[in-house]
Length: 352
Image 1 (cartoon, rainbow, N blue to C red):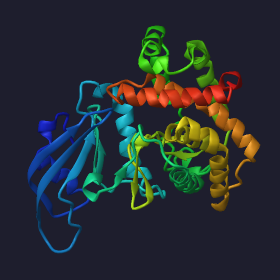
Image 2: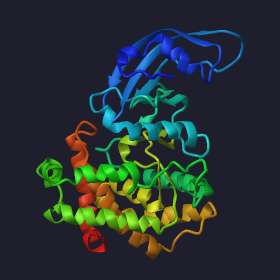
Image 3: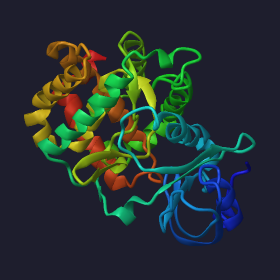
Image 4: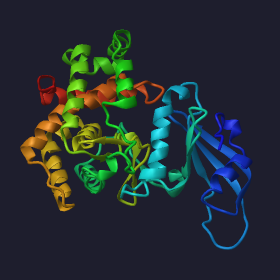
């Protein structure tokens, strides 16, 4: 179906068509736009008025989130919107990743638009994680246990092969992700970010554009020679929540990659610098035990530790170049400082 490109186009008629794909007999007779949350994607909280025909069936919640690309930058984000839509349509039903209930997921091949209609987590009172509030040991340990479950479910899966359910999932250093990296490694773009507060938050040693380009290329080659699994793809705190003690994940940008793509990124983003230095070895061992408990032959700790040390370069890159229309400068600076400190602690420059 044609998907709306403006907020005004989220009409009762369109919502009826979208929601009735999974909920036959449902009609939306009116819709109120409650608020609009800008970002990489736009989240629009709506309050539909429903009419149901026939008996039985699921009664939808009072408010829903319509998520897609409704902003000036949205045409350049088409691959990201498509990736998230496919997570809800094709990945969520297959793996144990606690994530919002999805009521519609579709794409419009004639535009940049892909849209997901999902539950309004705020209405259920979940606890949203916050980049400016680092997490405790136990919180990160529980998150790593949750990751180990869906990593194990997709470990070197045949579904990544041509014709498999996940054959469209690419690595973080290929396809549109590689194009994204190249765009921000342009000299004038890189210089702009190194002159920003997040650039000042990291050592001059880590501001070397040529090193960063080599490091990302190295990681791409290293990933191709490693066991792969399905990763959420962006497990910083702004994309995570806690639901009655259970780790929850949203804003997925799924990728095919080795375990450390996700584990390293999350641990460093989620922990205070001081706490990370105290806990990261124990937390890495905790993840490896959790992976083993799922029947996967986890790598030896020393091998895993070296992989972890190398992987820091990727998260550092992401938050050195992340645009303020996606995350505030305060958040980008906090994350850059955490990854910058870890890169120095682990001598990541010489490893990549």
